[in-house]
Amino acid sequence: QLQLVESGGGLVQPGGSLRLSCAASGFTLDYYAIGWFRQAPGKEREGVSCISRGAGSTNYADSVKGRLTISRDNAKNMVYLQMNSLKFEDTAIYYCAAVVTSVQAMCILSASEYEYWGQGTQVTVSS
Image 1 (cartoon, one colour):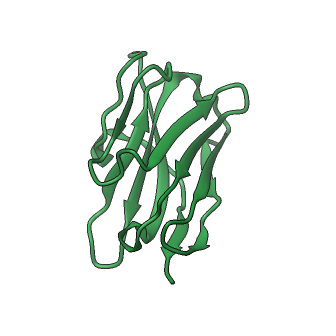
Image 2: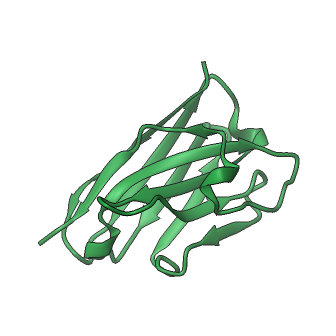
């Protein structure tokens, strides 16, 4: 059964860091572009970052550029989101998502493009 499981969320002070992980099981990530999305209370789900199947291309939302870094380790079937300089407005549930693709060097930061979703991990930035 194809499954994505996020981990690494938690409570952090402003300016702090977290590293989110997304573990895939039941399939190999080699053929999938991966996205990270988030949803804050009362707000729509928004794209945070994505990484292409071949890891040669990444995209970031303007609000997180320079602070978040997406990476993948296909050998471990894992995708990561390193989050630095966290702000109050980063508080949300973070989801990873996957879409199978034949394109090596492109990813699209739109939730409608993604087929498989994890259950999410809560990130709370608070003093």
